[in-house]
Amino acid sequence: MIFNRRNFLKAAGSTGLLTTSGIGSLLMDLFAFGNEANLSSVEARFYEKHPDREIECVLCPRFCKLGDKERGYCGVRENRDGTYYSLVYGKACSINIDPIEKKPLFHFFPGEMALSFASAGCNVNCKFCQNWEISQVRPEQIRHIDFPPDAVVRMAQKYKSPVIAYTYSEPDVFYEYMYDTAVLARKKKLKNVVITGGHVNPDPLRELIQVVDAIKVDLKSFSQDFYTEYVRGELKPVLDAIKLIAESPIWLEIVYLVIPTLNDSVDEIRRLSRWILDEIGPEVPIHFSRFQPMYLLKNLPPTPVSTLEKIRDLALQEVMHYVYIGNIPGHEAENTYCPNCKNLCVERRGYQIKRNDIKNGKCRFCDHPIPGIWS
Image 1: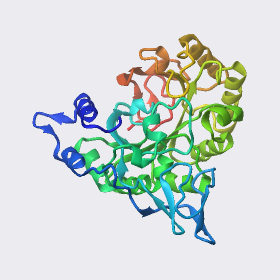
Image 2: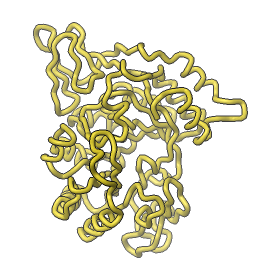
Image 3: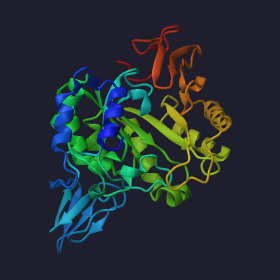
Image 4: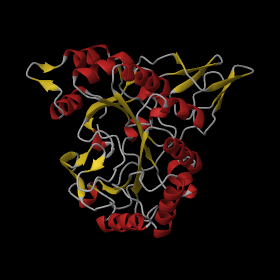
């Protein structure tokens, strides 16, 4: 949700943030002290200094080389006299409390709520981005509020959200803000989840993995040609990031937005499924989600349900165990089924959990382990 008072009030009412006495004092403080022109000057991490006040950013695969007063591709990190700064530390342009299923994360704390926020900026330019109003702008171009890490944690505690989600835009570009918030949240026994395109270098990702609990990666396609034309990014670093996360102790899920005629071929889905099976294994959940026309890609129709069902069948044929269909509320492929006895273990309708028959991480019917972080 982009910030303006009316939108925030509407969202607050729908998620329980409004009480009989109105918005809580913390929310009022955020609006009272928010300043859309007040950018941060916190030194960035993951950059190298070069002669003549030049720097090279090593946060993401773009490796931006910048002179004095220049910004990286993301638009939110700036070289000032040879020191690289984050302009969005503690500056949130979107805040909401979402069901964890909305991320989507289906095998992580089902039914719980996640305090979710973002800063402006992104390190790719997806032509189909659903949050382009905040991801494809510079921080000066959108209203934001002061929302430092300690305020994020206090809000999560106040509204009983056991999870904090870094989401909506690309969390990697507000890495320092995310990292410090995650460290503080963990001290308060809160969980951290990252919703990312995975266009990040290994070293920053390794450090982030140490302080978060789950990462959902939006894999845009299994084709470099698609990444070049529709994402302006690289596929290989994303695949490397997925493997790195899968090798770590934190939880991983993958989302693949199915765009008609562009990334929905039988060959591409089969190659993707086999890559996941070979490199990660059959138990990572993958969500094939329905595309809706938006931003710079309005000439294509929404993904037919029959296409999503066909793609899911292809993945299941490759022995993937947990294959979901997204953005089709009420579809049976929103549910989790035991790969052993085939019984329905978690029934979902949209973002709601209707039934959960996973007990102590196992199917209640046959005692087969169902991977995830269930509580």
